[in-house]
Image (cartoon, rainbow, N blue to C red; front, side):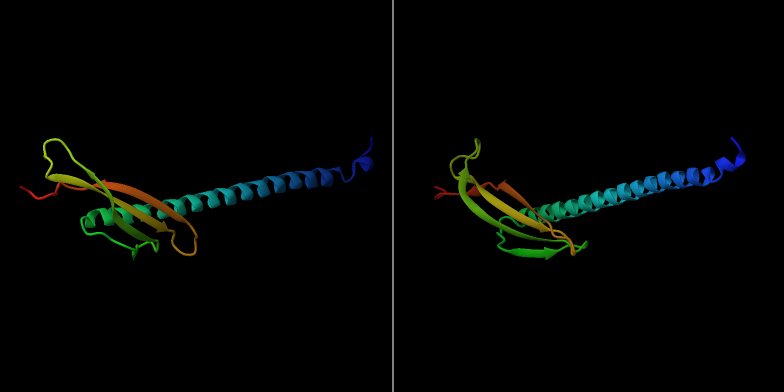
Length: 138
């Protein structure tokens, strides 16, 4: 083997190494883009759940006043709408007698993700409120 037969082999080896390094770089960019997308989806889901929970906490704080279709915006641009109503169920507990009852109040809150994202999350809660007087009180 003479030196003239091996001419250009360094060029071929260099091109193959560049091809391998380019493939590794493309793979790394793809993985980082996927990770960023997953993190953004997680952040959006958390903001949506937090807004729904904020709405349910607001409605619970307002009991015994019921809220119907109340909507509010939060600081992170997410929002919630909340509705509360009596379920018609009344619980009587020992120690309170038959003149005090505990009405059940259902609270439903729907949280919405901040713009430009599209996501909704619903939280439903049943609150047992009381004691409240029932009957004739004789």
